[in-house]
Length: 277
Image (cartoon, rainbow, N blue to C red; front, side, top):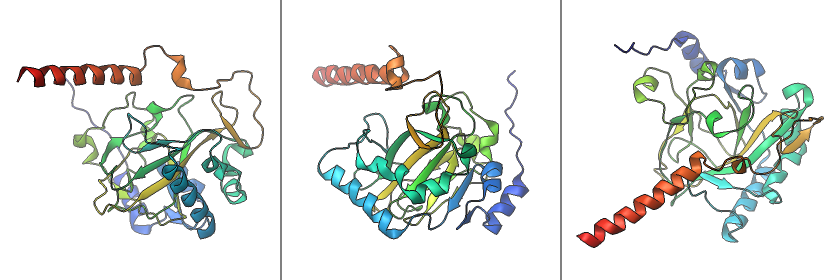
């Protein structure tokens, strides 16, 4: 007989955090970030700087220099020489992250995660660690809001403190039977705010119901000495173990390649069924 799954968590502590709103402010609170796995930094970037990167995004979309990933609901891949990557060179950004990793800050990817009139689906509850490479602890996504990102256009919802469970060992949807027992917070960012989120933290997003653009510029930071560090933000990066290039090329039979093969088989099967009808 299977033993019923039970997860213990400090509900009252999380309730107090949400009621007090100590998870947001104009100065990054590392204690809250470490304890609950997230923090909302208000007015982190100036409106002028946000407008610059929002314009870069729309220029890239218009000129088709960036496009949505085939196997991801919201992800838009950014190539290395794209101007959107310059966000990590901005003095304002560097000041925000200088206290991480004793001043040795690296980045392994930068991307856009968007919802709009064409890409509006909800995203199930998950954690990001299983989609990443390298060590699993003490890594953070900085979701920079280039637009209003709220519950109505599919903004990120988080489950405070769930990063404490670590990597769960799968990249699938975390069961609603589990998440319904936890406290969920709608982050609701204004343009220029930044959501700091530990990569192990559980999160999801609703459907974009008002069809207004929801655009985050996501910068994933880690210790610069990690082997898969792609960009040095500040400090030093001197590691004799180094991974360069696209980590997808490490595998001949990856999760993504299997999905593509299954989709081809499914498409072929549908055509066969349609012909037989």
